[in-house]
Image (cartoon, rainbow over all chains, first blue to last red; front, side, top):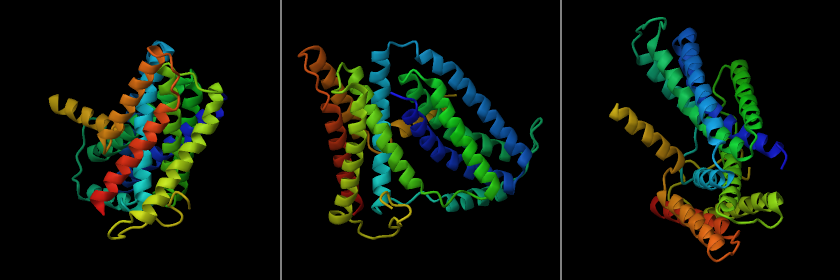
Length: 258
Length: 69
């Protein structure tokens, strides 16, 4: 298998997480103080780099079969969770993730918090807000990078996909100086859910001892089948199980088919 | 310390397992059955995990849309 599907999947998954981290960093930097915000961000990035540096090579020491079974199970479960949420959001059963309102909530909390300094950090609130936001979203990125990278024995390609996503989101965020509310986050999550479920099922079954018909080429069938079945579930829910009150139906740009 | 460990565990549970633990149980059971078929009965049941994933997702969505409707 070429590295391109790996890089693209990691890129999209990490872009979604980076958008959420950007919302928190912007709220902290624009309403509190940039220096402490950057210090918090840098501290979180150091922790994340250490996690990748330690866990990435360690996990590759596991036998490939065991690695694929465990990581495949985790990815399939994780991917189905993303798909479930994306389908419920697309059909109006769950509120859409709104970066604009998330940003406003963070700004209100940041404005209300008192200023206190600790050591070289002049605004402890801005530091911790930025540190926590980047670390928590970053751990999700690390999980995806390590599982995909180690399974394909190509950690470097996964790191490239993640790094490009973070750079693209950061540069865009700096350029617009606002949360990226117009990004069709639910459609991206739906696509990532399909990829994670497909790769997870493929690797998990392979790790369990299965030989796929066509080998790696089976993924070219699995991915579209998972996509078609997921879209069928969206259509089924929209038609037969609409929400009782359509509080926030998915607009065309945010729905998975839009 | 205990609180930190608890929140760390809660974060990863929410991160990987999410809102419906039944999905995780079905996927793990399907992988276990696949391994059993492969190593004991020598049957390459490549179709089992995808089918279980579709069934788990359908069931989870059915439950979620029933309770919210």
